[in-house]
Length: 157
Length: 157
DNA sequence: CGACCGACTGCACACATTGACCAGCCGATA
DNA sequence: TATCGGCTGGTCAATGTGTGCAGTCGGTCG
Image (cartoon, rainbow over all chains, first blue to last red):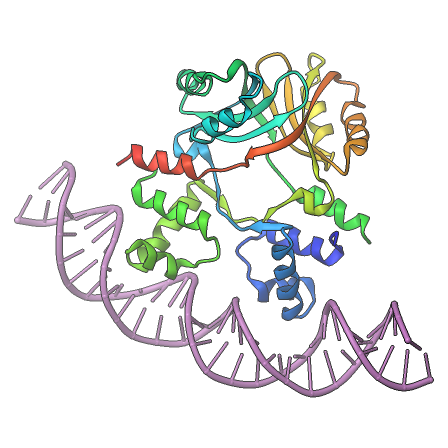
């Protein structure tokens, strides 16, 4: 179930050069095309690869500011807050967490000034008690998966 | 430069059904194939679409636990800390932020117990003064971009 | 030991898609 | 009005895809 070495190499290859097809991948990996197809089918059907959606840069859409907000929620309002935040386009993701806050969400905005509008919209909801925001200045490690895939593949050798 | 309505529909279409090609997309959007090709080329070359990498689920790799760690950094150690964290596969992303902490990173681990090992590795570095970790319990809004694209497209109508 | 099983290889085929071109049309603009 | 960029609708050769098949290999089970 885990992921073997060939799966790992395949995922890394696809991550590095997404435009190559099954045929080219089989050439690079030195295996038959059918093998790559079978592996890909399996990886996708068991959920290891969720899909190949376009990786869109919010900055290019006019939202260059990213921030993380820690939210404190009124007891029993979780579901309502989730629904509320799900309806705000600038909320890119939302997690419920342990620790000081109850939820952590990633926000984007058109500018620092615009961020105020977004935060107002986020916290302008009854179930939210308090919000603490951290604006992102730099992103030294953009969201990545390759090193983890390599490690996972190595572990199952 | 921003993104017009057709761009928005194209991105949303690709996000919803990544496997369709240029030809099918042109049929769905009701425009000529060359138009879709030209739009795609432009979106990719100006960075709006970074690529079409596989969307890998860390849980399927054996890393079902996600956490966010807020780090406090010793003055002037930023670059070293960045390099250190960049070398840890379980660090999926890293941001420098304003606010209470200096950096925020997303971590994954094989289990809650394993998370301790990851955190030890992350903070086991001279420049890091303190770390505060929040374990993710639920993910009501997984990382998404479609609503934002729709809004951006609408704004530029 | 022999049968079985899953995974991989190597090959074949029909079909769809891609990338590249081209001429022509149209609306905005100088 | 002349020009320009973007879109259309068409063609072409080359490539990739989905599919099926027979054969090989290593491991497992009775």
